[in-house]
Length: 331
Image (cartoon, rainbow, N blue to C red; front, side, top):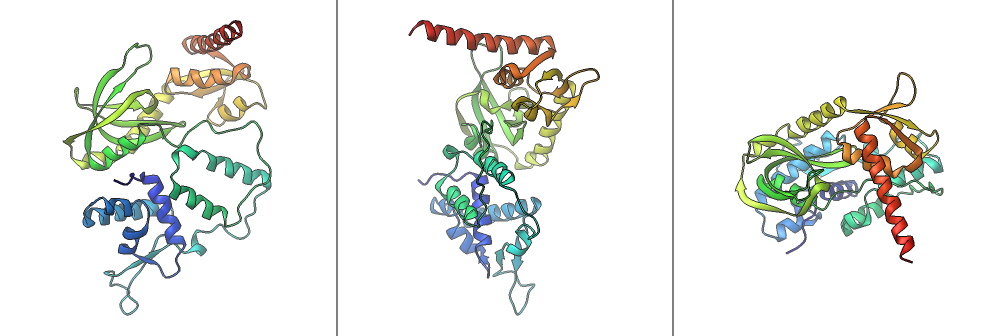
């Protein structure tokens, strides 16, 4: 069986295909030829299911501001039985009066590099090559600055698949401070990216309450069960998840002192507000995840409060020192 193409790659392939045609593509041409649909058709997915998927993808692209154009029959423009679809380059290209410096283009390339090699399929890479063929390139690299996020965690594809199928999933989850993971069963409703961390939002089957899980804390594989749930539960789930994360962040903030002009200053400053006296206030959702980030900056940042966060950062830095000391003694 052909490997399943993740939704974000399918959308990218669809954009590339619709931009590459002047006369447009019919729905059947898209389903037969665009990677992401073709594999599912080859695997025996019903044509009506594929058509619904295409309609959802088309609506999502339009929601994102991509001008997907529908072309009807020339004799009767309202007859959409043999409609063709395209993305007019004139409406999607950047205005001709916008220019980028080499440094700005390097930042754009940096953003593109977040889509790391191990998480992009051959079709996605081909799409990126086509974009680069348009002449957008940068000559000056940004030294010492690299993205911290990856396109997705290992559990992402299974959870995304389960959400599309409205199936209950089971996985082992390790909470901070616990020594062994616990088995969790949820109805997955949405995957959300918040502060460069992927979360899955859903209903915990055992207690019938909404819960949020960090993908990086899922241990092992995610198992998709045969138990289905009403797909209507997914309506508005992403918005509820983000609202919940923002509410938690608004209730937790750290007072930090950061060395100006450093990587820590650049990254943390984007989501910080000036403190009343000295330093900056940075909201956070998860103390342990935030401690990992702050420890990675080393001497560039100092935690003033809360004490629990400062202790967590010190513990991580002490562990690094101890590990390096042990490695040096063993040589």
